Amino acid sequence: MSFEEYAALARQLAEQRRAGEQHAATESARRRDLHAAVDYLQQRLTAQGHRLDQLGRSIRVDQPPAGSAPGSPAEAAGWPGPPSGSGSAPGSGFGAGPVTVAGSGLPSAAGSGPSTAPGAGDGGPDGAAGVPGRAGVGAYPELPAGEARLALPTAVSPAGVGVPAQRAAAVDPAVELELARRMADEADRHGQQAELLAQRPALLPTWSPLARAVAVYAACGAAAGVLVLALVLASGVGMVDGFTLGAWICAGLPAVAFFGGYLVLGRWGRPAMVTGTPPRYLPLGFLICFLLVPMAYCAYLLLVRGLR
Image (cartoon, rainbow, N blue to C red):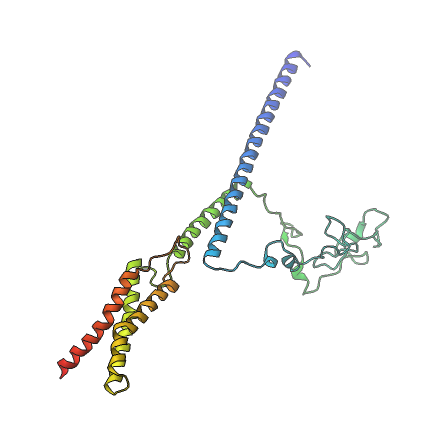
């Protein structure tokens, strides 16, 4: 080999080395970026979990029991397979006895002793016994109709011979991280919507606090006005005297309407998530209730005199 050929070979090896170093550096940078993205996504999901816990406590949603958490013993008990501590080897997942291939009823080589099938020597090849469909040489039995559905998936080759199905392609970590980031964005959007809904009360959620308070106090005053009319009718038949009627009209029923509206606003007019105490507009409610009930009595008197 001449010197020029040696020099060309050396240059080729140097270029391959530089290409390998560049590829290794690129792969290392990609791995660092993936690890940084995973750490950021983990921190983001942890913050989302804490925020959802706070939201659940604010709206009084019970937390799931500890037994239903992912990876708990209660969930692991529902999975098929041998339980832990049943004599299996550490990290193997198989028991000490022979393992049966799913759907075939045949013992596999894992965890079993030496093969005693015809044609199987001491660790040697199975020979004709390993070929299905050969009569008299230990061929595999045919699967029953019920177990045929549990057989391994096969793909038909052009020659018509059943071969194992092709494995799924390798998963790209960058694509999976991008999908996880989009799901985290979607979770943030739904979390913000849940917070907005939690900041609305159950009673008249689209109304402003002032309009809600006016409506509640007015409704309680109207209910008290109906009771005033009932007391007036009872007074007309002699069941209630004039002093009792005047006391209920001027003080009793307005006070009942005011406290009723106050309690209704505190129970159904309070959002699930609110900072501080929501306003209940006590002076406005007092004015509405102590004016509406006497006004209902005066309206009744004017109506009666107008009909006469």
